[in-house]
Amino acid sequence: MAINHLAPPTGHMADNVIGFARALRAAGLPVGPGAVIDAMNALQVIEIGQRADVFTTLESIFVKRHEHALIFAQAFDLFFRASEEWKSMLDSVPLPDHAKKKPPPASRRVQEALAQPASSDVQEVEQQDLKLSVSDKEVLQKKDFAQMSAAEIAEVTRAIANMRLPQAQLHTRRYQPDARGLRLDMRRTLRASLRTGGEIIDIHRLGRIDKPAPIVALLDISGSMSEYTRLFLHFLHAITDARKRVSVFLFGTRLTNVTRALRQRDPDEALANCSSSVEDWAGGTRIAVSLHNFNKLWARRVLGQGAIVLLISDGLEREADDRLAFEMDRLHRSCRRLIWLNPLLRYSGFEAKAQGIKMMLPHVDEFRPVHNLSSIEGLISALSSPLQPQHRNHIRPAA
Image (tube, rainbow, N blue to C red; front, top):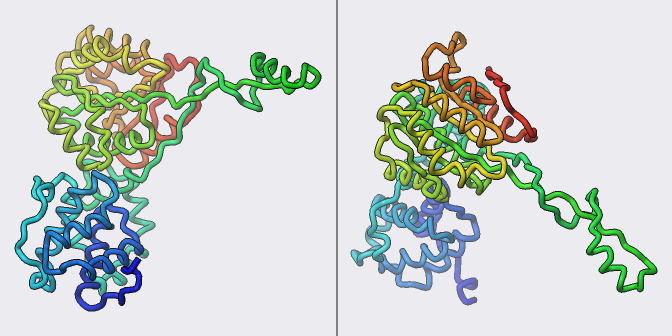
């Protein structure tokens, strides 16, 4: 309580704490004005010359989740190493052990946050953004992922991270108490009537329990899909955070389950875990073998309860034969809806001439492109539409 009565800090210390908080906020940590005030007050009651004490104090205030600890340590090291004003205030006492670990994949965001323009340039940059925001967004919506620059890909990644998938409800066979339900709950009705000796009967009803339909994604990570794989993994991470019933499998020459790796809260760390667990990244394509392994080992585990399957591939199979058609038909019969997302549909004159595409196309319910933000938004609309009992032999090429 005594901290609240201290005089507000001024000078270089206050400027550095505010700058450090801005860097943390730009790197993704939820740091508000209250935390900044607490940090400046706390620094006045500790030994400011002890680097380890400063680190621990700021960490206890700014870090609220376990996954933010390594990002904070990386930001602290980069910020105060570059800050000339604090070099004389901090000694060479070593940091805690967990701050010496290898920087996480999200440390790239920390370096970008520290490279933001100075406060004097912020107003000019914001005015430029206001002038170009409308036209830039329109161009970015329809621009092909494969033709984007690094800055545009970063902007698209932020847009995908903010996407939210409305949950398409699946009617189950289970019931729960519902005042507007259409089914009479005889047990609860009779039990309630016993309290009044049967003179007054309060009718209780039941309604069906609705659950979001499971989503199973099969993502091609071959060399021909390399421009689209990472961005679609960002999309899968975004919907995995909103819907827990999402299973993700990567395949090139073999099948790899990355569902658990993709559930990391930080998107960069999740994608790094995915890439480290895959051995055939940007290699060849064996769709038939991969689908066979999925149908044999995983279909019964993840395709129950009316699952929707997203097959993300260009269909360029190097071993196209009858096995591919058989495995596609088996997958089609095991799920409620099979949506094939093909980046080759970005071409207006696309024709199914490849042998693999000809064998796969008769066994899908929808055939959609996946090459820009507009196509991903169209996919969200399709996934959010009400689920019908039958979706067989209904192919809709999307624009």
